[in-house]
Image (cartoon, rainbow, N blue to C red):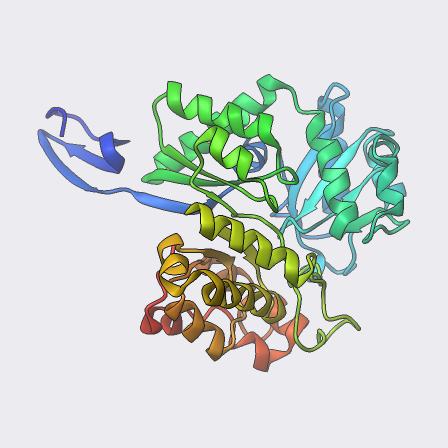
Length: 382
């Protein structure tokens, strides 16, 4: 506590406290920790084109047109659309975005941020996307094509835009009583320049602390150079249910695919091996059961090579881990692994008629995000 004051306010104090002040009395409580953050993307949504409330395709196109008119030629960056509840049941096409944005560059990320729709102008700036896996002539990009166009879109962000967005995220976090943000950065999320800017902002301006991860296979030089928390975070082993890219052991209910594993088993194991040997926490984005299985098997292998104690000391981490099998949970507990989970996902997409059930069927959907099972087995939750 720093002082007593006869006023009402809430602020983030030192060491992650939140101070609630009223009429000379102070109650100090622990601040929240947000364990999975993309500061720039969140800030752009807070300050720019937030598409979460769109009720239809026409609604989205109208918002894009209005934003483009006031955008002064800048790339239209939007996020949050979800076509599963729209009457059209489809995202906009490249041609529709071209008309809405007057021919400008457009990047609109789906609500899960694992696919996007883009305009012709943005594709012209990233021609390699056309030959990448996940490209679609209609402008709906997934997998590697999505990573390519996202890098092109974010390359157009100015330093001033980035600073405004990152400040907005930290300000919003502080207002919610969040005292620490765990940034999930990487070359395909926002890049090193973006991460360095965020770390500088957190070191020089008041607000929530920032603990950062770098999601790149073998990217240990960045972790060491910048003094980061670990070599993981959004190191994408798969995608998301909504975009049909989360890797499943059996196919989706509503599409003839089982999703996509991005890396070979040996590459995942090598990353875990290098991290364990260096005493660095590794981490992976895994949502489907096949992706969770791949990483758990990799950690099991490294434990046989370097010893269980070394693996447990590293505390390797899974982001999301929504669809574990019972054997995954018991293995994670034995291997000292952590699960960074998002209950808000289940609140948004769970239930017998929502997106999870649409993609997976009600039976599989009901097994997702077993937080109680994780806790009962002794798997720490972030």
